[in-house]
Image (cartoon, one colour):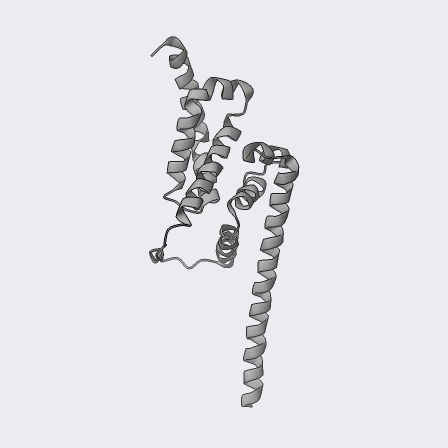
Length: 184
């Protein structure tokens, strides 16, 4: 190991130690899968290490790693869609009953997971990471207008799905009320 590599590793290691948990959360939010997230982060960091000096000097390390995570997620999604999936294992029962906020968050997350990868990544970057559209464009390696479009289209899809769910619930409530009137 030469002197340059010895100097680079502590900076890289310190950066990974400080940003690692946030990168793990980001990867989970992009993939929606706890088992894929650590692998995506590890692969992204492995790709960043040889370029660390230039990434750190230009201040683009975080964007580079996040973009690598998004690219890895998209590649994995393309591979998986060719596979026949089986049902997920049911989650273990918990002794705690979720409150309305947790149920709303779970429903929102389920809706976000139905979005295409780029739109899901843009929504996570915008509303979870609180990035500007310019920063999202850097991470997704696209034009700022494209980043705005991803977020706009994602929100439109989410609103449409929420409206559809609301109409379905209203329809079932009306049907239940009509059945009660017929029985009287």
